[in-house]
Image (tube, rainbow, N blue to C red; front, side, top):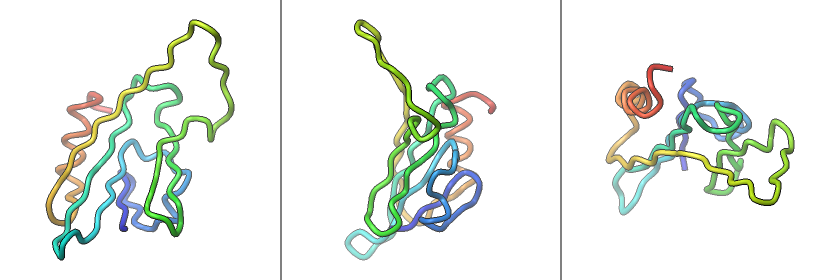
Length: 107
């Protein structure tokens, strides 16, 4: 698994706990490069949310609780928006940034 963040970080350990806005995860599937990008929406709680990128296992997650706990009270609804886009080949940061700005506005 390889990563690329909005800030240009490509290391899994280095990208852990950053607040990138978007993160692309990619690698070889059936001998061909492919991946997906997950974008954090600007309306989300604690935007931009930190990402947890495991240093040796193939997973990551946006995690607003890294910046501190919060309480979900009875009757409260927690909503968050993310966009997931798949791609073939290596990630193209300029293309992804265009998708991201379209999703969140020009932030």
